[in-house]
Image (cartoon, rainbow, N blue to C red; front, side, top):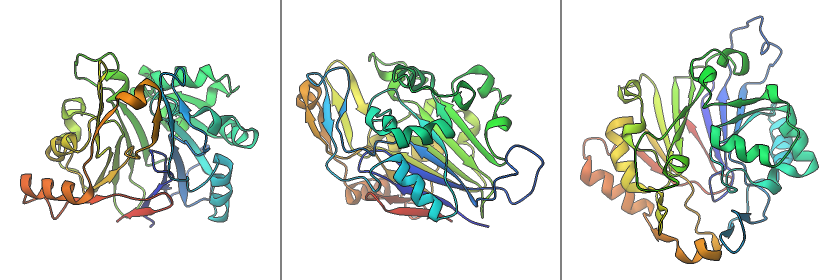
Length: 315
């Protein structure tokens, strides 16, 4: 059986998650697919144009590192050479570096978006609707909805052995954006060489936001995709929790692999660009902090920073 693959697509927080499909045959909607992987695209910002939140005077950020693929359709074409295609796209946050308008609105990429399943949170669904893309409502799934959280819809929209869950921020904080920023997405796959659980939280999620069952030791591998750099804004507060929060998550989540994300030092303009404060946690410093705080776990917890185009297999 194959392993889960994680591909870093840009210097910010765009990822391709390749999840092995079940080899068992079932007479359901997914039995017609013979591809080895279910290909889930996270937060695509592939077009080189900047992201703008509100007005350029407020926030305009430009990526420095070129993306591994310049568009969604280019990624889809590459996957065709691997015997697959994009199966789903997930938008985790409502901001334009997660729902990037130019990436999803070019004609060829929009055709891909209209073909695949689209997963959102309650907040990112509003942002996506604001773009008026003409998506089929039956192919748009709000992970925050009560029906999906109760599992009534999951079997209809996800292949066997794959699950996706939105972990809402449970913490109270004196910040108007805390609940929009500090949740997580849990992607689980039991079809590969061993079960794999991926906690994707580019801005950070605190241990109190994890359900108690997730704090128990798992049978397979656990991955945490999280910012390393800590970023703050006046009035808003913590934008990215950074590596100090990773240290708090280690005893709760017990990750085997921690992957850095959302740390690209982009060209920032506008009010946000001038006022954003960043505390950098490089890989060597992060490794030393883990070793100092958790000496018994430092050998079993691998920290990794991938460049655009690089990937890792979870085995």
